[in-house]
Amino acid sequence: MKLSSRVGLIKPSATMAVAERASALRAQGADLIDFGAGEPDFDTPEPIKDAAVEAMRRGATKYTAVGGTDALKGAIVTKLQRDNGLAYEKREVMASCGGKHSLFVAFHVLFGPGDEVIVPAPYWVSYPDILLLAGAEARLVRTTAESGFKLSPEALEAAITDRTRAVIINSPSNPTGAAYAAEELRPLLDVIARHNLIVISDDVYEMMVYGNFQRTHVLQLRPDLRERTLVVNSVSKTYAMTGWRIGYTAAPAHVIKAMATLQGQMTSNPSSVAQAAAVQALSGPQDAVTHMVREFGRRAEFVVDRLRAIPNVVCPKPEGAFYVFPNIAAYLNRTAGGVVLKSGDDLAAYLIDSAHVAVVGGTDFGYPDHIRISYANSMENLERGLDRIDAALRKLA
Ligand SMILES: Cc1ncc(COP(=O)(O)O)c(C=O)c1O
Image (tube, rainbow, N blue to C red; front, side, top):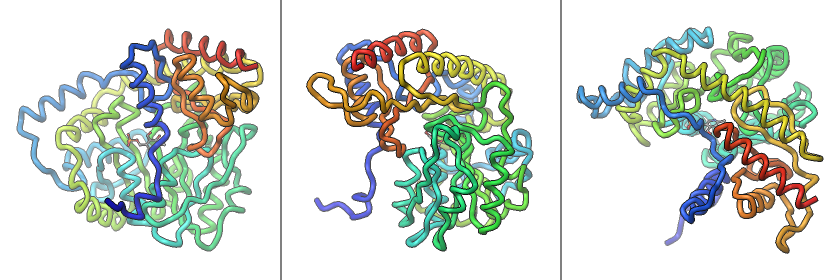
């Protein structure tokens, strides 16, 4: 059967490919250590699960309004005020089936053929593909490890053309963990404001920042950009709820209205039961988040120290998220089992096959000579897995 030209534009996500290889090895009984996952290793907190059970019992099992229940919209509005100091009304927010779906719907109502969106690289694998599906294009702007993988105002300015419509700010970032401090963000927002661009603020890792890092929201620094900003967030990472599929967007009312129209012809509402769970997550006690973030911070220190102790692995210290993105170029063009390792993806295949450690190659994040390591795993597994990576890399030396 002939497939549409649209689907030919995109590729399966690299992170999913690693997950599949990892589960195949696990099914064969291998003692696999998984640093590929893009989700917290913690369980969804009990009160959130209880809220879902209670919702089912009370019969909240039917369609809801497309953009979410009134209770969920209220919880999103309260969260934005509490955590970000941002004032939104219910008609300016909506829920979707995960942050990825929020971005999908947003990109499709905002962008089309001829439009370019600036995506700082390394980037989350899905941005360019979702933009392609919308008929638009990602304009990738490379950053360097020396600058902590952060976009400079000069590089941003140089990438803007008369087709540029928007800039994606993902802080902290997947895959690098880099997060912008206020003084780094402000000059970028000055450029964005001067060129009348839209800001897509992808905040899904906002709570995961470590040490003394102070997070600042785009709209706290530049409230005047509110009419041109979309705030996208999700309960997935913050509350260990990746499987529940609830994301949300805050934006000017006319954008939310268009997004709800599109979503209404696409998925209708996100799961009613998951919405009830998300209300509890956003409005209930936040101590489980504090605990999880403290633990991730401890692991980040450990992982960076261990990687830096491996000769010629270059690993900037992340400010947040739960990933590190080391440069492993020194280990490329070596031979393992008769195969020349040409990229981080080849190195990832070598690590999973010879050391039973799953990591993701950097190609789909725009940096083929890097790998992404997720430290959403127990300290014990981090210790064992890094021992294995260390030994496997030294074997190549
Ligand atoms: C940067 C970034 N944005 C958005 C998402 C979407 O997450 P979800 O659809 O689970 O809310 C992810 C998930 O990996 C991500 O890494």
